[in-house]
Image (tube, rainbow, N blue to C red):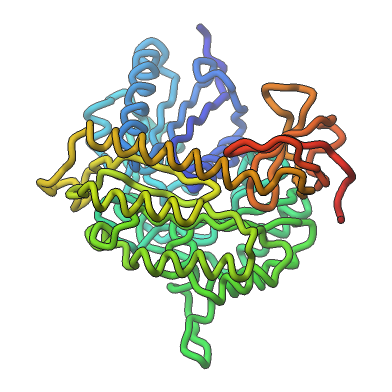
Length: 451
C-alpha cells in the first residue's frame, strides 16, 4: 500500500485529559500541513496517546504498535509516536521494546510536538519525558465536536493514591490563569461551541499553586471562583467540570453550581471504595461518611442532580465484608452512572508491591456483582425521567438510526429523538421523554429552548 505523505492518525486511550491532549496535538499536526486519516494504514504519521490506569489499555497499545512496527519495516517514511502516560512511565524502555519508534513523549510535552518532530526529521530518536513547566498553550486544538469542547484548567496531580500512576506520569499540579481559561472559552463561544467541560485530573485543586490569599485565609483562586469568572462568556450555554476529588469538594462549590444557571447539575466524584480502611490504604484522604455528606449536600441544594463516580474492587487486602461496604454505599446513594474496575497493579505504585494481592477470580466475581447492582440502580434512577420534559443539547446523528439525533440532558443523560441533524445540531431542544433505559433516554421533540 502506498502511503500518503502528509496524513496522520491518532488513537487515544483513557481519560478525558488524554482526549483533550489528542485534540491539541491534532491541531498542531494540522497547522504543520497534515491531514486527518480515518485509516491508520493510509497515514504517514501514527500517534498513540496512551493510558496506564488499566493494564488492558497498556497491553492494547503494544498490540497496535506491533502491527505498525512491522509496517514500518517496509515503509521507512512512516513516523511512529507514543505519547501519554505509557510513554512517561516507560521512557527509553519503550525504544528497547519497539525500536521502530521515532518519538516517545510524556503528557507534559504535548504542546512541544512540532519541535520534537523537527528533531525526528533530523534523524533522531527522541525520548521526551523529563519534567517541565507547562507554558500557556496557544495552539488550536482539532476538536472532535463542533458543539462541545474540553478546556484544560489544571494539569498534573499532587495526590499520592497508592494505586495510581497519574502523579508519576502527568507531573505536579499546574493551574492555568483564569484569564487564559476565559480567553480560550471566549474563542470557543465565538466559534459556535455551546458546551464547555473544564478539565483537570483533580479539578477541585484548581488554583492552589496560583499566588494570592483572601482576607478569610483561603486561596484567592479556586474552582468556585473560576466558575463565577467564566460563567458569562458569550455563546457558551452550558458548563461542566471533571474530575472532582472528595478531599477538596466544598459546600461553597455546590452553592455556586446551584446559583450559576449555565453550570449543569451533574457531578462526577469518584469514591473508589465504600470502606474506610480501604480508603486509608488507598491514601484517598477522606472517609465514606464524608463522601456521603458531600452527596447529601448536593441533593439538599439540587435534589435532581445527576451523580456519577468511579469505584475499584479487589484492592489488595480487601475482605468480603469491606467489599460489601462498597455495595452498601452504591445501594444507598443510587448513582446515575458508575465506572467500575477491578484493581490492576500499576508499575511504580506502592500497592503493586504489596503481598496481599487478591486473585483474579475474586476480583472478577466482585466486579460482576457490583456491575449488576450498578445496572439495577441506574435503571431505577432513570425512571424519574419518564414523561418529563428535558433540555437536550443536540450533538450528532444517532449512528444506529439516521432518522434520529442524539444529545445530552443537563444531567448528562444521553438522549435520542427523531429529527434532522442539519437543522438541530448545536440546538437546545425541549424533549418529552417517552422511553427510559439505565443509561440513556428516548423522547419526542417539542420546541427549541429557551423554555
